[in-house]
Image (cartoon, rainbow, N blue to C red):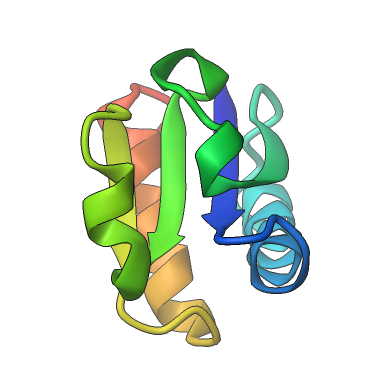
Length: 93
């Protein structure tokens, strides 16, 4: 199972979200989940099982598959809920 955090450049915000997702994955003890980050233009439907993007990239992420739109990329509680929901959708918890 692969989670992919994305932003427009694949540098700052996607890396921060990736690190936070990694913390949450460890916290939830989801050993079969890998987390990466990328710029959105490099991602395709085969790039990951779940994609995490900020609200401003929602339209650009359409068609990728299981896309989680974050209202705030700095709200760790929102991110924790989103990771839990994604893990549940994919039968991990």
